[in-house]
Length: 260
Image (cartoon, rainbow, N blue to C red; front, side, top):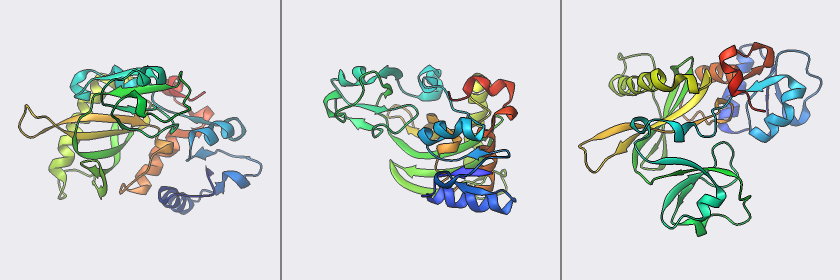
């Protein structure tokens, strides 16, 4: 069974159709009856947390400070973990985002006074140096390998485009090879710090002191709450089913990443 909110996004519609095609029941969370078999989740973290015990699924997610703890060779910029209190103290521009939820918009703020009012001062935030990504790509990773991928933005503007992951025989083979090589290096160093099913966004980071671009991690996210953009929905569903599935099927290496 795949459970998701009744009010569906485009990604939810695609995943629902794929799940139904595999013979899975697709149920709206608001109309959910008794749960008698294995259940999976795709949707927001608050609803997912409320339903986890009832449905018996475990939600895998990267730890809050994952990006801040990465070596600089993978971030290409200064990133640190802090709280809303630290963000309020900013006296210059920074990219500020909550690491897991959507409690306030992730954005470049000219200083701390520009953050939305009424925030809990203890809320965790990621504080990042402002950089320019020429293009950004969403990667659905399964066991450290790219299962599905899509470009989603160009110079900060939404611009989805499929990125096939079947190797060099397609038009974007060279681009995929670059991304795959970067991901291989990332997994070799930090693979143990990620769940086996996760989303990692990467981008082409412009560097005024170097010709061309270099690859850098944008962020990591929960696969069960990430837009597919132009990725193959069948492969996205494979990752989602692992990332938010029956608790008894969680692999030992993933136990540290189960949302509580």
